[in-house]
Image 1: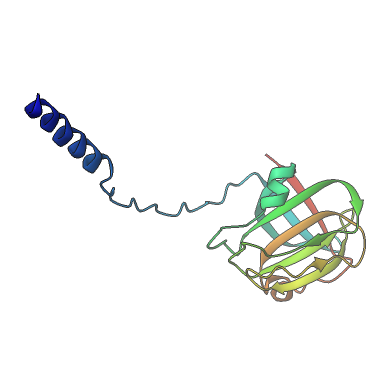
Image 2: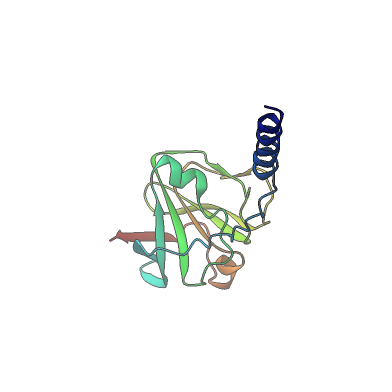
Amino acid sequence: MRFLKLFFLVGFMSVLSFSCKKEKAKTVKPVEISFKKEGELNIFKKDSIVKTIAIEIADNEYETQTGLMYRNSMGNDQGMLFVFPNEQPRSFYMKNTKIALDIIYISSTGKIVSFQKDAKPLDETSLPSEKPAKYVLEINGGLSDQWNLIEGDSIAYTKF
């Protein structure tokens, strides 16, 4: 009987020590979110095209809330177009956004109404539109100056 108790005690202790062993920490590689071309956008000065870029389109609540967060880069011929159901004052911020952006606010008629240029990565400061906007275009920081964009220029896009 004593042997049996000792046998169960040793067995119980070995089960405890086995179940309490530390597991090796698993390293999780960050997922790179890649650009997904969903359309093309033309930027116009008067009637001539200044630039054509590939766009991702954010047109639902999840996509508009996430935007370009967690991205490490974006090409200079790419952008994200946010499409909202109505025209109203808008405000964006750079929470979890790792790349500097130019944020371009656009009216329901496709006219650029205001800019927030070179928005600082990871900054949660509010970056409001100066006028109501239905669309918001995000491109790499500095490109709106490089392309000489001004208020009154316009856009047109095609969704694939």
